[in-house]
Picture 1 (cartoon, rainbow, N blue to C red):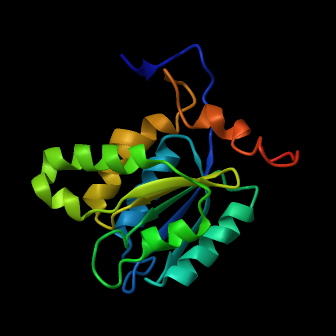
Picture 2 (picture 1 turned 45 degrees about the vertical axis):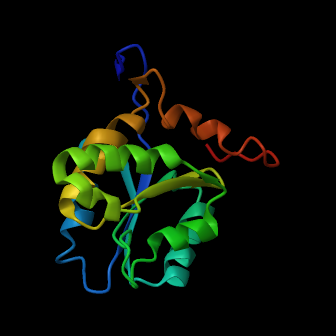
Length: 183
């Protein structure tokens, strides 16, 4: 069974939090606050935080900025993953990611199904990798952010988690590119 191993050292990762919303502000962004609280409680570093409206080009521009920033290892977004006309976070991610991580969305929806039933089919939660940076897109609800962090990201972003985790792969994400000192 998978577990946290005391044999490995905890390595904090630098995480940027993006809230995608036409209406939220820092004062009422409960989903963003939930992610920030959980990642800092876990010992990770909040690298940056932003709120962007539901505009694919603006979202992609913010993602590109963080992808280019060597002080950001991971981006977690909340919001814009539904099916309405203004939900464009997955389209923005498709503009920037090099590799899709389909298992993230699949696992998120499988876990979510146990709580909200077939309503989970409306979620387009997804993840990918771009230029050595992980990007995870969660739905905008606070519950979805709790589930995404507590049930998936808390272990996959913990370097001690066995049998494997995303952190131990960070140094290898850019191995196909010319040498640099990203991580």
